[in-house]
Image 1 (cartoon, rainbow, N blue to C red):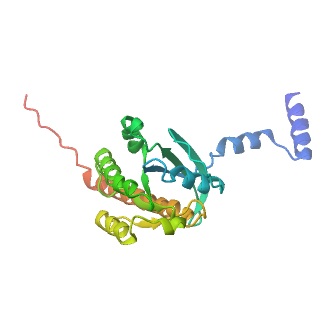
Image 2: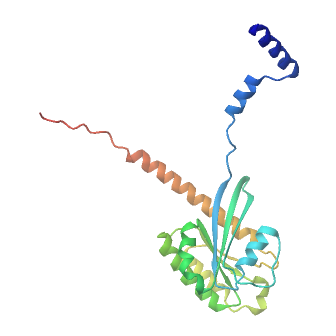
Image 3: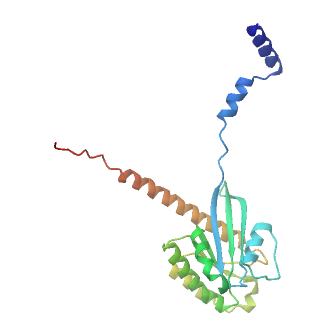
Length: 228
């Protein structure tokens, strides 16, 4: 009786092109798709230099004319970096001193930093030194992925921070220097993609170092001789 029913069911499924046993095995063997690599970017700089404008231009191809002080906004986007799909997580931090107490937590979470100033405001350029020192202190690392960004390059006629001065600071810090305009979108994609490449390179170096240490760090077990 049971064999007859089983035969009828198998015949029915075969005619319909189905097999519950096979489907179950296939379903169990499926592995979840690998998630794109996530790169965490932190925007730092004085208030009003264009951190939010750069972020929104990169995220949505929009230029925000009116400035509103940012407390902290986070954005995430999938992009293609050198043929590989990755995710970028951007934390747009506040430039005001009111929020200095919580900056350390932001800095700890970041894998790379865009340090932004306005080429029309010498004070914002001077402030980059303090931001750099704070980040190095929190990360305890002199070689973190870091770009110095001079924003508002479209206001060349109002420039008050000489180009040579900017390049000299970047040279002393041994970091790239790029000038951008959130308004015209000049070099906006470049700074985010260049920083992601720096982050990717750092992760690769850390992975090799970890694997290397893992191999060297293995010690053979020592057997203790116990005298009774």
